[in-house]
Length: 311
Ligand SMILES: [Zn+2]
Ligand SMILES: [Zn+2]
Image (tube, rainbow, N blue to C red; front, top):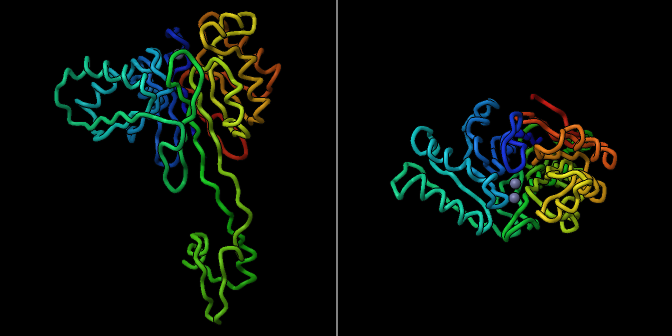
């Protein structure tokens, strides 16, 4: 199960209701902050998530509405919070701007925290046995823009009935089988993983795109995703402006969801020029399972669907 908390959903400048880009993706005890617009640390506190275990930040690109919050956050972390290490992932351009920002914040001074700036290239950038994060290129303005794919590992379900039929005892033997070992029963028969494990089940797939100017290059990475988070800065009536500034319309985002067979679409980076209702209406006419989340909304994403938890 993934959870996502939308911390900031406004485009370019904050509005009364919406802060600048940031969302928190949670999986078991791992937390990934995607982008860190101005005001993100306050939003983290308001969401009830706080700073605990917040040691990985993924940047989609280097525009200020996605990174300025790092200044305040690192300042806080370096003085008051017990976070020992913070890893910042991003393209070269984003990291260069972050380096400039950190120069202002830290002024070359010593901090009690290890700050790692990790340049991202397309491919897996983080993984453990349960899930992985893969970076993929996104076309926006400027070089080195990335989206992030959160993929739960494929697993084979344990077939309880088969195990009973074969006489596999209830004990550590079952775990060994799940881990891929062959066991020997008291009567000498051998039972292997293939005897008691079902067909592989795809894990949950969540795709998070930041600002994007086109969608054709995103169809494959979004294919069959359980949830897609992507910008919808404009409405179709201003499609020419959207393409001029490297942004998407709600309709373009919804068409991507249809083409890629996405299960649920979250539209963020909402411009103050439109009402939330208009964005939702334009997208839902094309793709019904669309949500325009508000700041601090939290959702649970499983194979069974998307469910709102708080907000
Ligand atoms: Zn932006
Ligand atoms: Zn941007």
